Length: 351
Image 1 (cartoon, rainbow, N blue to C red):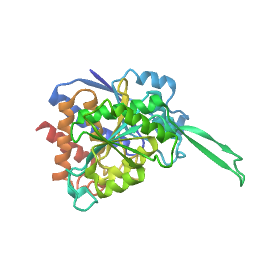
Image 2 (cartoon, helix red, strand yellow):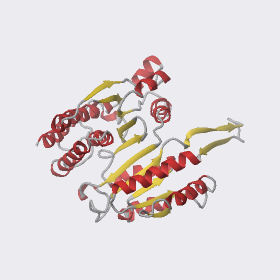
Image 3 (cartoon, rainbow, N blue to C red):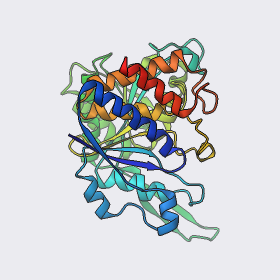
Image 4 (tube, rainbow, N blue to C red):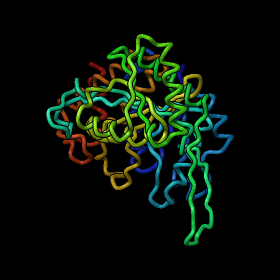
């Protein structure tokens, strides 16, 4: 029995989660697995009403679950950073979800903004360190509010944190078994402390994986090659801030936020899966948001829970719906409502 904690969140989060759960139910019936869900209200609305977000008691309860399924968090009436820190980062750090896994896969040339790129050209995965770096929140102000003010933001990287992320990336590259190529994305020529550590550990661990081809690319070059030659990549491993940046570019070349899903992974504990597009509050309640990213996140969750056949069926269904039914992946322009897109995915799974 899979126990799944559901966090619908803010804005369009509840709408896309509803469709993801609809698909999850269809997959469970088709592939004969059992699950149960419990909803947790960690939203901007709750924060505005109570001042509460995720506390230590909530974390302890969530540790009892098989996985977490998240819609999105972010409310325009709450100052930026409060919910993100109090919910997303709190969960990632407290549950030690030290890997952010982002597949970047193009389903149709029609969705790609790049000229002459096909699905075989855009099919790679970014493994992002998810618990350290600049997102650790370490730093200080000096002489705040004066003309001599200095703001210091520290990128905190430990040997343990870097090595476990890199080892995960090597193992994932081997398991993925495509080109078996792992690229380290960094900035060794300028960020000489953090990236000296990353580079040393990367090439030390590489000696244990002779079947994996390794290379290195500066982050600025990586963004250029995402656009010019995305077919060069198989798996990329990088730190927290660079991973955050390049995965949004990855989402655009695969068709946009409407199709992009990600996982916050603790290989030994509870992982959390989500669409990466945010809460999109301007579309709330209009039944026009694209739910495919949330449905793909549900598929990633099932794969992580050992339901590989069901996960593959969900992806196959999403590909069919995206390529054969939708006019575009953009909200309000798909030719179908949010609920209808979910129904189409269900129909394909049932077939």
